[in-house]
Image (cartoon, rainbow, N blue to C red; front, side, top):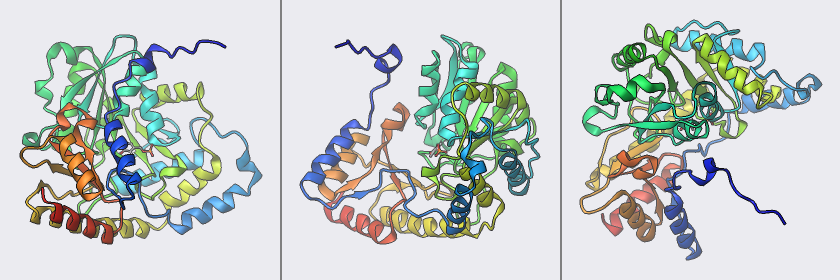
Length: 389
Ligand SMILES: *Cc1c(COP(=O)(O)O)cnc(C)c1O
């Protein structure tokens, strides 16, 4: 028998704040309650058939069975560059400004290894996607949190960051359209980010996972559309949410060549790239007919209207999202994030994620996702109405 001792980096991980709600969910399930799970950020709809067909064909080709290139197939990186040109009018050199990722989470988790030394600081938002902090922590750094507040439209107040922190910061993670708040950003905000990054010599990592999931004719911007963005940073993107491909593990990072190449250097020492057949299917997704994206968004928009209109009628305070499949709901008076989530689960059998699980500044909110069908959303509203808030 040997004694298994975990490394400091695992022992000192922040507490998993969704543990309590997960435990309650199991308990409610055991009681035989028909749970409506509005907790998961994973599309319920299948990948469009033409993309699956493309994988099927590519999987039979022995040329795709070998080790791929760690930085991605030339053809895939070129498809990414074509897509950026078509979608955002951003020109990219597919050889130096694009790297393929095994899902964007992989790149987000690994980029700190390229730039963070022991004791270095990174900036990330609270609430925010937890991986921004964990990757930095694994690399020996710490995160300074920029709060996302309603009074600032859930954009970070860069002027509130202490100068000594800003001077020491190496990376900044931002994410618009935003998970979990569903807030959006435009070039006015991105201009401020670029000026801040120039002033303090900070690499900006913009997570753009939700730019294609948008409603009412609104088209989110890429960070790279704003002048000067490519001098200070990169953008992470993913096929996961756009084409219902979360299980396929395919994403990419684009932008400043030195940053992309350093991320590629880390990857070349850790993984050997994404399965080529999956990359071929990714080319089909990016180059092909985009009417599937339109259909997916139409479905989410109808779901959004059912849930948001229903919640507003019940007297809850929530902004109608212009993008993402998240609804960021203020908890009613007398509740905390945790107690409201518990109320919804134990009384109505509805899973909502307590906002403080995404960071301290998420307290006072719960997040609901639009990844269940319209009938179930109608029922969720009806159940909340019948148990009261
Ligand atoms: C879903 C999600 C991702 C990860 O997507 P993958 O490409 O599947 O790894 C990244 N960032 C945010 C904010 C997300 O919600």
